[in-house]
Length: 162
Image 1 (cartoon, rainbow, N blue to C red):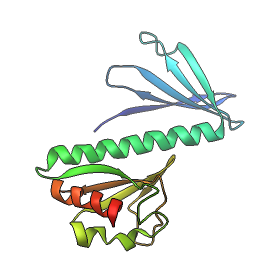
Image 2: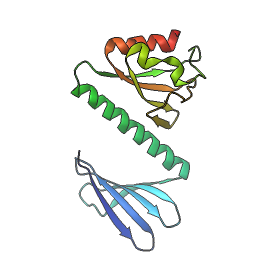
Image 3: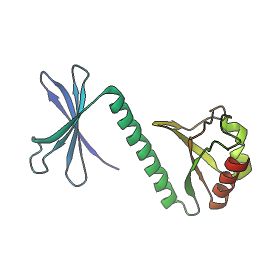
């Protein structure tokens, strides 16, 4: 996967990093010396002409990075499914009624009981990649798991019923 990212120094302002999409569109992230950040969209036919910009607070920039990071990770996991016959990814939510809400991931014994692998936990805007057995589970967590269809179905039952 090759993506073109261009760095442009903006004298007196800061730096702009542009991502050039496959279709040729240009999206810029301007990092001002003051710490302010903004997204900039550019005219499709004039890469020097910004058509719109959105200023981001620190929290908004963090949230956007988290969303894009989670989206990328989920997309990569979906790509694994396409490459490996019989291997699937699943998103399972820890409900308030789960016996594992407020427990540790290791308490589920998911790998031993279902032959699945929990590869990440999405908690709000945060992604916990490669969680350990000591990682706490909370109501509302989304478990990202990889395994066979039968294994993932078994994991769903374990997380629901214990």
